[in-house]
Length: 90
View 1: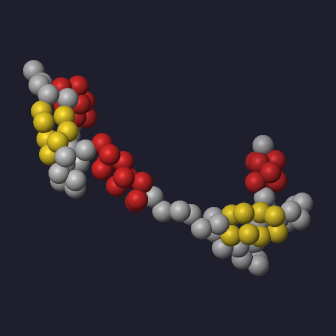
View 2: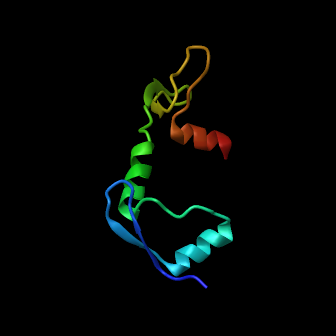
């Protein structure tokens, strides 16, 4: 039913094979469009869209140690380090 197709990457212009197995997977998932990028360009695009999270340093309200958190701590809310947070939620 499906046959391997050679496609051209829209980013780098390289040819890549859209295999029969991949086509079957796309059909099962209901995807209507063929891939437009080769695996290397898809991976690079996915990696570039992930942003590095900014971590803030605070003092743990339980043990007084350093806590690194992905949000800016406020004075009115206590911050816990990962170990104290895990203990509290256990």
